[in-house]
Image (cartoon, rainbow, N blue to C red):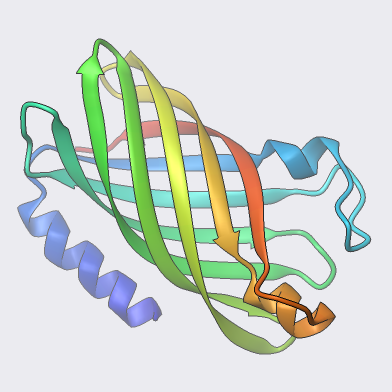
Length: 166
């Protein structure tokens, strides 16, 4: 999976028409509330994401993403993923991007497949800086493996900051 993400980044960065952004985010929900699996607040769940922007239209632009997530839960969780989204930017300084990604969760000495859907709402503060909120719905196959039951989807709300590299 790491090889695929690196290949996508290098391939698309060569043709990224408009910009390359890097962003960091933290799960605000786990920072302030306990979860149902014994993780007490504050629990740190952070993401680093690279967004490659291209194919500008009047409505917005296409985004190819690579993301790494680290959650300081017991035991720790790592998630690597790649995805695609479309950013609508018709309102001055406001960007709204629905996206979907597929990745691997590494936990319990195993790797689990995982889908995720997100909705990013960003405010562009300056040409190279933006802040935002990311609502995520993640397929948590690692939790299903440990605790059993039906397919488990978890919602999260991340606070993010982004910086434009190109």
